[in-house]
Length: 418
Image 1: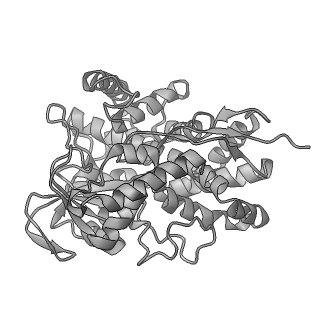
Image 2: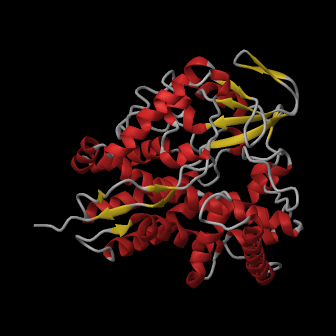
Image 3: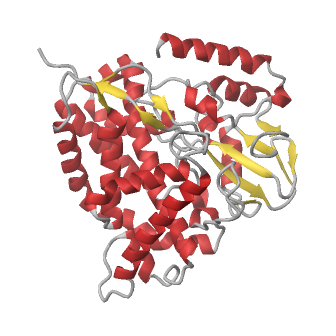
């Protein structure tokens, strides 16, 4: 971590412990952009782990910050509903976008079941050689001894190519998927979108594009093995209203793109910030699967999920009222020292590397988590075959959002071999 970043983190620590506890708002997006969120979550975990924020840009809300409390919310969908929205930021009432992750059973279960075969063990085995070939090609085309943007050249490119496979999407238009994903997850105060109206216009372009693909595939005598064909021809989804189809498409784009791409970027950053672990990886490449799980925990690409209380209930000694907004901060649960040993450290050979909340838990656990793990494993296997070290140059540029821990750009360099 550069000196400037260390100074910012030190100032954030002073602010976190000087601010009256009831005035702490964990949702400030700029802290995620600056990577200064950690001391605020540390204090709340220790002093007020089920924390009420009365005033914030997102309205009153509860923050759940401990691992076991998050698990309690995740596994009690009868009380904590997804149907009020999955983000701390309320949806656009003018343009509602239903999607199965923001549904409760039984509709959630029926729609999720339609797309889950895409990540069956057999399908993953069939996709691995494709991912490996693409990763190798991407690495072989990287410049040696010259700086380049790791996010654009590696993380985005690899995951966007994977989305093309999942959707059977025209390969030459693949960067449209990246753009639509960025628009969905970006705030209006970033340089990614100009305004909500401009963003919605681009989302409508996405809707038109995917409607055309749906029309080509619906009713096919032999439906393809892609996500659009699955939804267009399954009983639970073939009669979806257009906005529900769009909502599910955007969910699958973001789920298949942002989380994996930010873990690819975060993993390289973590290895550079922990050279002892990078050395351990070179000496013991068999640790790659364990390291992948540690990257996913350390990065926590989805920072939070939100639920809405359907009834009065008690959590962590606090009374949550019916209708209250409840935010599960995965980014905090994954640093909970009462459950995870030395949680702020990046350790590629942890005893229980899959003990993390990054994929969620319960009925809403990420449907594509095994695909994400496989992609990351292949990336590092192919990388280590070619490059003992890839350096991160300077601080990465992060996205201003509290929903994802995301990177806009990160300069990297492959040292020239002597």
